[in-house]
Picture 1 (cartoon, rainbow, N blue to C red):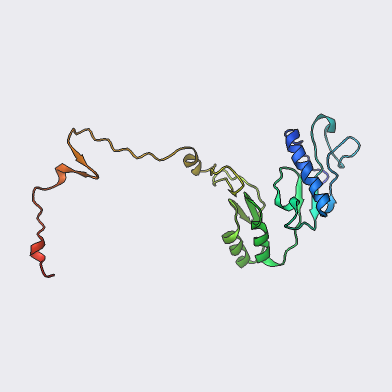
Picture 2: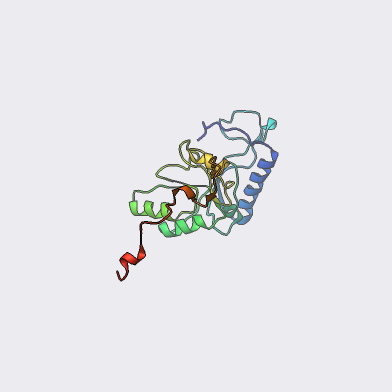
Length: 202
């Protein structure tokens, strides 16, 4: 949308990564529906606010006719890019989504509850939304990915405690008496009231 205001890339390295992603799209034969690469004073989106020469800005970009074999599809990028991939049915959609090396966030829009169930059961992602966008972090839910996404932790919610700590079981006896593993010698009767002979033949 022309009225959307967005900021620049955090630094040149991230812009260069996105620019390479853009170049892959052109080289691999994807169809560019919208976007023109880097935003410049001479080439900027309608309604753009800011000084293109003061930072690294990229055009919001939409690619169509993207195929799983393309680098555009296989490589993760942090920038304003959307890839449109055509599939036939829910099974192919899930298989295609799972074919990449990443799995942070996923989403499925459908009125078919069976498809929704299949998606959330089979998708390889750390977070999944049904009929909602891939909004990412929810303060009350674990945040993190699978495969090449994330850093192995599950931040947010109560799970963040276990991400940055570890369990430590301590047994501290101050009686000064000899203890055996998982039992106190004082609790063992001198003679057991149970006699195996009494139930001989049972």
